[in-house]
Length: 184
Image 1: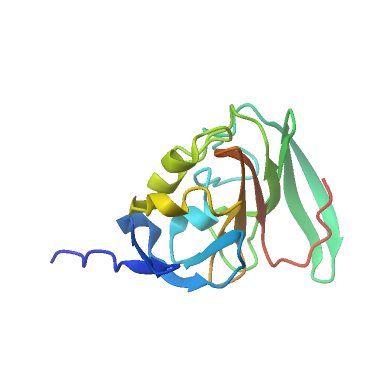
Image 2: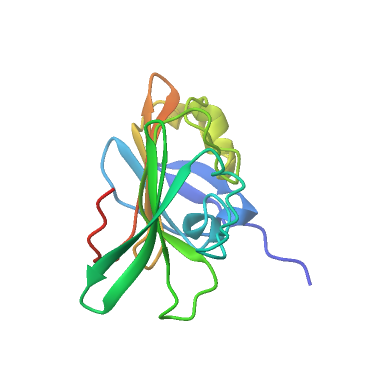
């Protein structure tokens, strides 16, 4: 049985066609300088691939990062997190064993370095048209320069905010709805 093709969406009256892997659930009303979409996609949960273990993490795309294990106190007990840092980029990963998860979650992160790659080829410094090709098979050229921010959200509170400057991806901020004290 073949999968149905992605449903085109209208952005400011113009037609955009998401990629199969994006699984757009809805268009978010984010504001004049921000385009937001809610997705049902594994990419939003694992933008660097899956990290399966705190002892022996599989950090293919994050191998340049220095990893430090830390325990933080919370209302539900001690939480093991992994702090990853590389130049001006940083991430906090949480291995959620309470809910039976097999992979880590990103609690928080900031990617600012051009040598950090996401699983779909996104990198800081890439041109905005190449960026939109990672999420859309067809994206209106008229909208390339309209948005300074692109927000990608999941239905359960995970959020990526991609920031642009002069037609290039400038930085990426990652967050989740977890209520842990997650300072770097």
